[in-house]
Image 1 (cartoon, rainbow, N blue to C red):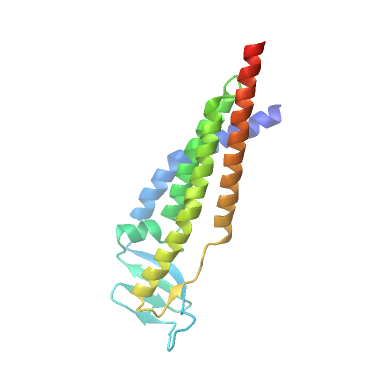
Image 2 (cartoon, helix red, strand yellow):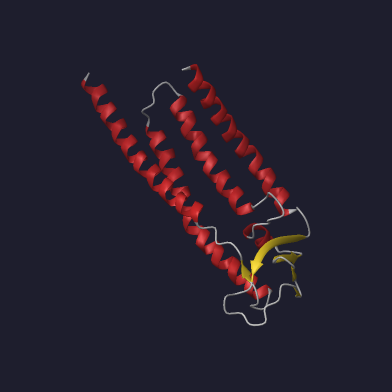
Length: 196
């Protein structure tokens, strides 16, 4: 039991750390530098695509690194900066995920594990996972269009960010299923308490 409590405390502390640090990381990412670097590659059907090119607002360097000069606020939020640890979109995901998880942990921490709020927070966690599963392809489509526009259709985004996005869907669906089971268990516990 002591072993479980120590890991439980570490998990709770890490959720508080995420809630406190994520806004700081977002601010740091938004004021990080005057440019963003993204790995790119030529489109499949591109003719005469070079590995080094300069455009009005961006430059493609050797080894396929697109550097956007003076990025807009939207570009800072949506584009992952691969030379920095700060990816605003992913930080927002962890921030929004940490809040219902912390509320869930605090609810379960109370005397009775069967509470209505626990099912609600678990369902919120599932919906946040599914929401970011939906937003990730939209983000990727926007990123590809932006890279094509910035480079006059000579380069495209290198990564598609696929596997961990599908994991979000399955974990989200599992969390929603668990929340329904938890709600039914809460109702059964309430009925049992009334009959006793």
